[in-house]
Amino acid sequence: MDSFFKVWELAKEKFGLERKVHVDMDEAYIRIYKNGNVVVRADGDREDLEYLYIQAASRLANWMQLRENT
Image (tube, rainbow, N blue to C red; front, top):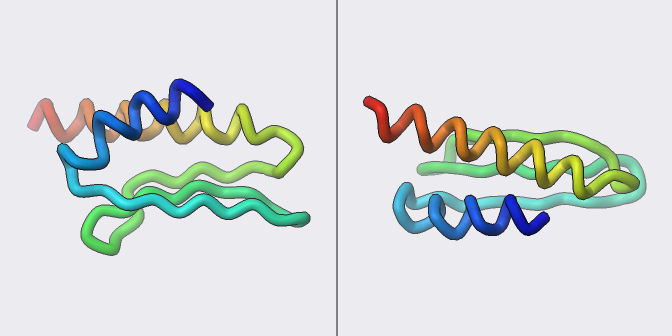
């Protein structure tokens, strides 16, 4: 989870992002939004939240890199 929060802190203000984390008995997901549109999504289950956060961190880092290279 630490890797996600490090990337998130860099990205949220720089790109004006918002996030939603949902965890219940059936599912778990993280959605990151820019201007109301989903730009990063990671899905998993509540038994492996660490993997869910790693997925989200990786996808967010890739998304940021694409934005910085354009």
